[in-house]
Length: 75
Length: 529
Image 1 (tube, rainbow over the protein chains, first blue to last red):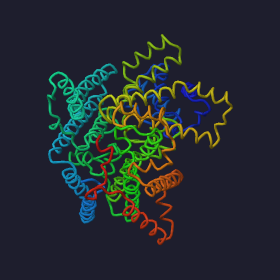
Image 2 (image 1 turned 45 degrees about the vertical axis):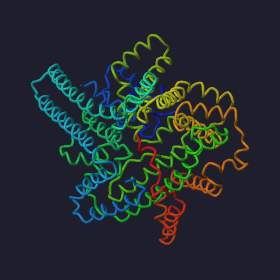
Image 3 (image 1 turned 90 degrees about the horizontal axis):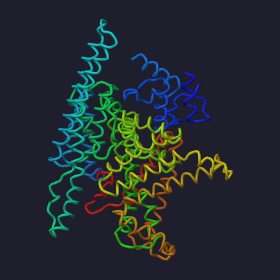
Image 4 (image 1 turned 90 degrees about the vertical axis):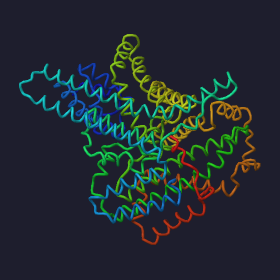
């Protein structure tokens, strides 16, 4: 999960993504950040994010993103 | 039957009585019958087959895909299957689902495109024919644009894509689905409702709740005030300035300012009315506006203005484009060719331009709306791509960004960007837009605002004062709404005070509202989409 936090921090400085929750709902990151985030996650973790995962709840915190990555790896 | 007409209020009263006289479990049927009646009365009988066809196709294809997924899951549950076998089954079903997806999209989006673009194509063909033969070759009279086609197509296609992407399962009951598509408060001008929200709202027990009914009526009143007192009053001034003739630049500037408030009060007023109507029946519609003029950046502005359309384009155009295989290929090539920042710029610019060009074309066809789409694409791309430079500039000039003045500056800047966008579409063509800019730059003549010239455009000084006072009231209420629910605050007051406020609102609408011939208010701007 540390890597996820690192990626998120590279997109938005000044936020503690270890503890931050509802980062999409509260507009901490927007759709343009999510686009960059997806490309970085796919490259880093060698996974492919499909449209079925493109829901706010999957990107709302570092933990949620990490959980999604685990799920994608299991597929 | 416009929703600001007396006929609509009569229709609403009948629907209300029928709805609450009916047993709770059948109330959705009353809503369905009322919605069909409204559609036939507000539109025309000839429009009805279009919405019925779209609903049948989307529902039928959605069900077919849902059944395919159920079949796939059954096969996948076989424990004897290895990973490769499972992948093969998934691929096989994915292909079949994709074929159904393409069929439904071609049918429904095809109808939308044909009805919206044919008029434009005919106009262009006639221009060519006139230059060759000296007369038009085609008549545009036969072209019809079914009532609410953009809104119901987007709502139903959104449902369908969500089923395809397995976000939720299909609706087994066609009549329930048809109610979602044709539900009368949202059919004409949105909000573009998600099935996950409105579909579920329409399924819950719609019980009588006097508090909610009063809240709904209060919201309707506020909507009528915005539309009839502010929007239609400002419309008189704006439409007489944008008449295609030359005026002083200062008059054009006043029209640009009024136009911004007019479109906001027109559209958000409509949304308040229909959300209020829906609340009366116990159904919550999605919020479509969140005080967009308080936005500090253009992207934020679009998260506050016509939120359901922005959300639709984000989920069904922007994200699919961003994660598409083609976009991934482009990103990989960009990473090799450019620096990290350059490749990120490429990753942003293509989906943003595609999304905003399509958003522009959703609003209207032709060069004007294409220019509008490009205008917003450029603003959003620049604001994202040059963020580090903007931050450097603020640091260089030692600007304190936590101050009220800086936040106010950002709000005014965003508002000016919005006025710039309106300037592309409101005057009625890019030629006229250029004429307005030319007059603002070369013939400003600011004294026209104080020497009485400003009163030559349909609004005398009491009317202008009233318009200004109404905008101030709108601003005050919006400030309050940013902090708390005004209706809840009103509820906490004594009954006498609440009554006075409600009566004042009713009387101000009746006395200060602008009514055209036959007591019909001006048509809503967003109805044409």
